Image 1 (cartoon, chains in turn green, purple):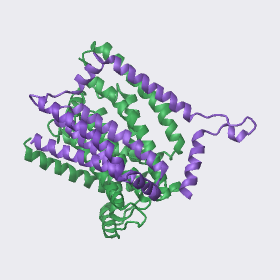
Image 2 (cartoon, each protein chain N blue to C red):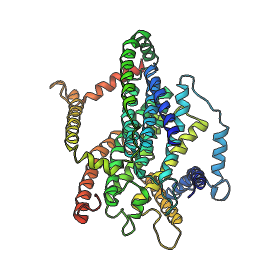
Image 3 (cartoon, each protein chain N blue to C red):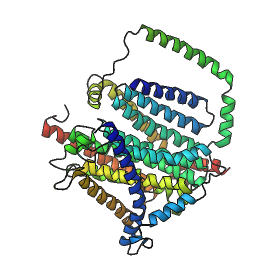
Image 4 (cartoon, rainbow over the protein chains, first blue to last red):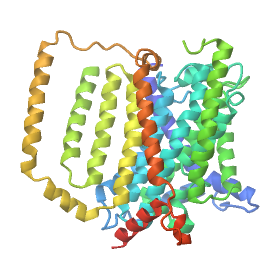
Length: 322
Length: 190
């Protein structure tokens, strides 16, 4: 692709991601309604899809207020960080054989870096609000995300070992014979759970647990600034789903249909699975979440890492390494 | 193109580092430091070390600085902390550090003026870094791992459940962290 085309494509991906995140707010509520045997928002337009527009008008016209006791600059800066970091993450995702914004040899690390920068949004939002609930929410999110980042990164190293590259296009190409969800099922399991914790969605939304912290880190936020946090959360959901598809379910690989359609279908199913998890699993206690991470997830990841390394050495006689 | 990008990110790195040193609000200083680290990551990338750049973002900006912010949040200094910093950062204390860094700067300039060619921009990929780390530098990796293990054991020792009094049944199982957190709660409520 030429430079101009790449810029256009990047803008298109951004628009699609933001639009997708907006529609997802409605789609999630409808799907939850189906699974919980109720309707969900179904009044505005066909199937209630205009609910998205109604929500947007409501959020845009709300008074844009900064509490007088808050740290003003940081308070305004915090919600933008998560949106920027998540949108940057989309840059390395391969949508088709030659359809990507950038294909760097550190693509996977770039993704991990961007998700780890997204933590600051929650952290600084909680700190700048100067509110006890927000502070506790921010503290929880810091501990939760730093812990889960550890095995999020480690769980992907099995994929890197099998494909012999950090480049996401190479990783997809390495799955032609077998999707990595079969040899790397432990990695997939850990990455899935770490992904939910990292995008702090239900059931792991302890930073904003409304039954104990009112709304956690975004207690003081309203209007568009609150909408930015929500946008970042849904962008994170789409990004994590796209990464799971790329790393474990063969990315754009698939017969008959064009690659980007396969990518879209697979990502859609992973998003639905995330919403199903939200509908099905209750929220754990905070200490349960942390001990699950360090006492179950970390050992599983390390076993997976050692086993994958041993098998890769045995199968290829070090072929993938050198 | 790359030269312009290099100078822009170098300027941002210097600018934010100075601000990180001089801010009295600890949280603001940390944000400047994070931006400085990100700028350094861009410089690494431009110099042909993408793996180092990625690690700079993932580990320094993404993990270590998060823990720094975490500590700032736990302490929750607020206005009193800003005031104390302001008293500490009076102009006099800058004199000695300024002289020392001036000497270093002169040395650096001398070294650079002796250098014939600028550093060549060869690309060092993740694979080469790994092969070098676990090849000639494997001893350094092992020593670093031992250091980390010592840190881990130390953290376990500090955070373990310990017996306060044999008679007091409630207190026997109280972890040290609860005491710290109650103290923090007291401070927050004041």
